[in-house]
Length: 147
Image (tube, rainbow, N blue to C red):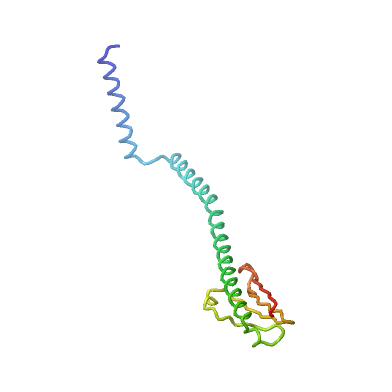
C-alpha cells in the first residue's frame, strides 16, 4: 500500500463519518432507539427522585428543629428576665398559688402559642413557659427562693 492510497482511504472514512452524522441529524430515530431513549430518561428521573425526596424531608425536619430551638431561646430569655424582675420585689404583688402571668417583654410576640405560669408557694417563686403544642421548644422553668 502506498502513501496516496492510505490518505485516500482516510479521506473516504472521514467523508463517510461526516455523511453518517449529517444523515442521522436529518432522519428521525427508529422506534427501538426512541424506546431506549425514553427508558433511559425514566430511569434517570427515578434516580433523581429517589435522591431528592429524602433530602427534601431532611430540610423540612431541620426547619422544624430550628424553629423549636428559636422558641426555646426566646422563652428562656423572657423567663430569665421576668424572674429577675420578680426577685426585685414584684413577686409581692401576686397571691400564693398558681396563676397565669403576662410578661413585659416585647419578644413574646415571636413565641408560638403557649402560656406563662407563675406559682408562689412558701416564699418560692416559680415561673414557667408552657408551649401549647408539642415540638415547640419544650417548657422552660426557673424557680428561686425569695428573701
